[in-house]
Image 1 (cartoon, rainbow, N blue to C red):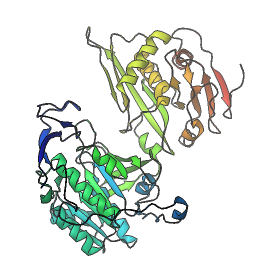
Image 2: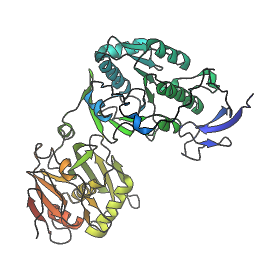
Image 3: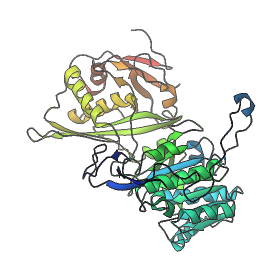
Image 4: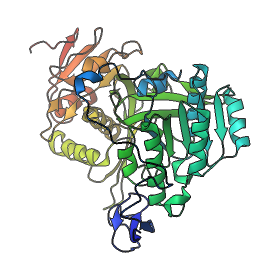
Length: 471
């Protein structure tokens, strides 16, 4: 008989430790290290005595043509956009998000769309009663034939129900609340979550239904539970949005069946999530032109262009307590830009508090937003307004030079339609037809040309048709 061995593991990041500690040495969280009993050498079958899958024989790759199964469209255009067409049969998807963002609402609408297409599905609600699920489904118009619901936390009963109903899709909400008595670990522990997820993955890969697991997130926004879950599944989706705002965003950070980086947008309404087709108009709906510190940046999420307003605020700081804070933009990148502004453009901000925000909850990890952020900060610091018909993009180097951004024309696809006529960008950038390019070679030139002379006369070149002229 195998001997049980005791280890300690962090329930947030999954890191193992030889002994208990009050603080995890890997992620730094307090009171997250828990005792875990493991069996090094398991029985020849599964944990519940079921036989293991037969060994897979090698197959020459040339004979595999045509074996790919078509995806299952859900009927939600924004969801299918992120998953490159829909759910893949026999796949496992992990959907993570903060409480209250609408994960359960999104999945009910997805399953209703699948049911309308003739697919059978089972929603296992391990955190809500059947009456609560029914009320939500009734409000969303998701009372569809072929959509089954169960309120259970026992893994064995969940697997048996999915097999008995022969469903195409199984949704478990959430995986942290499901337990398998055969594993011997307490419910919610790292070992329990990992074991339950592994069993569901094995079922999917053995010809079972496509599985969607709902996961919680930690305080810093990362997916809670062992990191092995992200490696076990085929797709990792994050569902984001402020609880008191209506905008919701779905991103694929891992997808084995298509590209990652696509963004799905919804607006939360009383009747559920409504897909956003004109993202630029929605994100700029509340913009107030003529306000210092406001600049529009053309972002690109996957293949989707988004016009995002960047706001900055500069205020006097108490001696020795200058703050740098950013929402939707990297704080480290902001600190670097402020140093370049002071050193290369002569804009002293050492005694000022600086705040930067990407409006609408959009996260900008794109270096192409550097110039827009720098211009917004300079505008807020000087009180000079950036022209309302101007969009700004460009990467800023440590020497103050401006570098071109890839896919500039695609980023600007909707700018003209929304009333913008000019683009401030590095020299050599190609922009969309109908927009005038204001080309600048350095950050200093860009600031002087649009906020007045900060250091020396501007040297901007106005170009029409998207290609800069010599001069």
